[in-house]
Image (tube, rainbow, N blue to C red):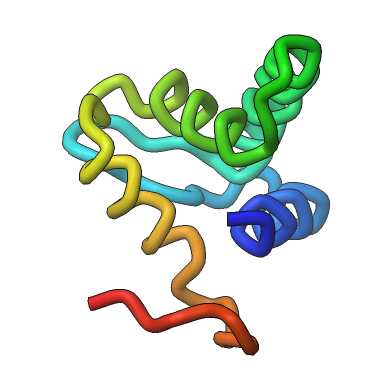
Length: 93
């Protein structure tokens, strides 16, 4: 998930107003998603939680229609669709 977070940050820096993901009737831009993830990361890291928790929390806060782990996984898969697989990653699907 670190690669997905890095991808979101890169896209937020270059195209912050571009839609990052849609789920149900909700959509979030790269800029807004990156901002929410960073806000959650600042809070969650103080409680011993890592970047993956911040990504999950950011997705769920930005896309209220996402309510299950399976839904979060779908959004993460969509966000990472352009990332080239590297050693240690496996294809989803």
